[in-house]
Length: 309
Image 1 (cartoon, rainbow, N blue to C red):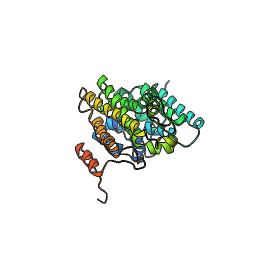
Image 2 (cartoon, rainbow, N blue to C red; image 1 turned 45 degrees about the vertical axis):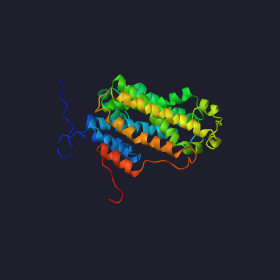
Image 3 (cartoon, rainbow, N blue to C red; image 1 turned 90 degrees about the vertical axis):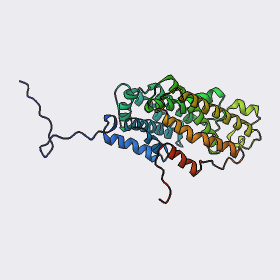
Image 4 (tube, rainbow, N blue to C red; image 1 turned 60 degrees about the horizontal axis):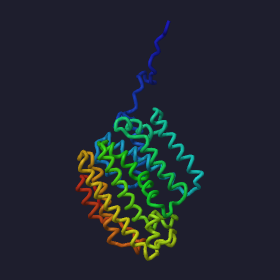
């Protein structure tokens, strides 16, 4: 005879309660752990995603946390042979995730987000491949084709994941990811020229450097007379991507594109400020003025903390 097994009881005689659940039906402890990764990064992303409803917001937090963790591996000051196993481990985590296996808060939150928002495995793997490009060896004067692949993996792949979490999985939304990802990444490259050169990196395209007579060497390229022409050219390409992204957004779900428009509103003025500063005093880091940050916060309904208040 089969004896029914009673449910386990707590010391008080009560049946143990399920852990509290939050967005997407995920354990609140996992959501909190992922959000803490985002908060600890110290960027405006945490506040920026508050324009989204809870399920989409926490999906974006998990996407960001994944990107942050693999990017940190690539940026660590250690030999590639020590980084590769950790990047490979993340590849296996993503493959396992799509087979229903998870191993921590980030993958558990992603496991809920993947089917809900049709997040694609190949986009997660592309992000890891982009980080591996940075981890293998410093990128120095890549040709235009390699630079485009890097931008696609490091930025547009994140965009393809993001637009789905925002609420639009259309071809037009993928086009937004394509154009806006490149616009943001090229702006980052121009903003970080001095910092990257000190780390032995130079992301400006080799063909344009050669045409302008600029050495393909991070230590000497930034002092070359032809550098301004190369940077001006790359800034114009970034601007063209911003324009194309805005055009693609017009064909998308307008509510879903709100975070994407917010990103463009933050970065396009930064690009214009870089162009106004010019390409000589690259050690003078360009940042958005405080009034611009306040305008963006008010425009998108975000909380804005004034210092001393």
